[in-house]
Every structure is written in C-alpha cells, then in structure tokens.
Amino acid sequence: MKKILVAEDDELNRMVIKEMLALIVPNVNIEIVDNGLEAYLKLKENSYDLILTDIDMPKLDGRELLKKVKGELHLNIPIICVTAFAVTGDKERLLLEGFDDYLSKPIDMNKLGEVIRKFLGENID
Ligand SMILES: [Mg+2]
Image (cartoon, rainbow, N blue to C red; front, side):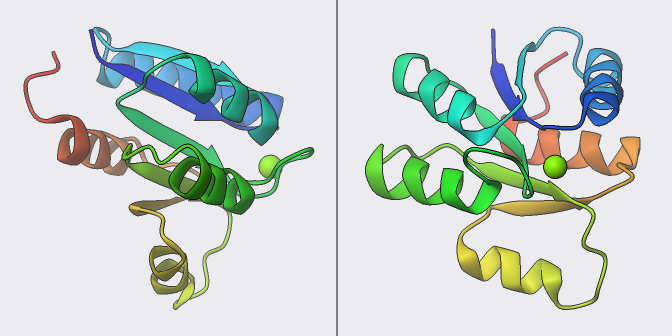
C-alpha cells in the first residue's frame, strides 16, 4: 500500500485534505502531522511515497522540511507544497527551491488528484 505523509498546522485544512484524500485515493495510507518537525521525525523512521506539506508551520516550516528531507535524510520522495501563495511567479520560485510540485489553497480536488497520480501512478485505486 502506498503511503502519503501530510504536514499541515491548520486544523480545518487538515480535515479538508484528509476528506479529499479519502475520496481520491481510498486505498492509499494517509498520515497527517501538524508541523514540519513531526513530519521530519516520521520520515526518519518510516518510508513514504509522497509528501504534501504546508509552507507556514511552527517548529519547522515547509522549506526547512524540504531541506532536511533532500539534504540531510537524502530521501528521493516527491515533495509537494500546498500553500496559500497565489501570486504568479511563486510556483516557479517554489519549484526552483526544490519542491516537486505546487498546489494552491483552497485546494482544488481535481488538481490534488492529478498531482497524486502524476507522482504515485495511475494504479493506486
Ligand atoms: Mg500553515
């Protein structure tokens, strides 16, 4: 079973993303944590196929998490950032920083599905 790790500090956003993922990929194991540090600790102990992370979070933000995952843990897991930034150019900047893809909030369920299939493949249902 494929596994997705989600890091998001906002409780409502956590609920929304959980509901969406349950509908889009009911057969994928979803783990949700509320900050980047928790995500980092999980990643040290477990393997995942995809990470969805917020940018602004306490303890360790999405950018710091990205640096640790790629630079310190040397994990080759796709990391998708989910952020409220909506200005043109932000997407390119985030991709340059090393994120594998970008989703803007409020999350569009079709786009979320597209991104997940792009990285996990079509055979996840
Ligand atoms: Mg946040």
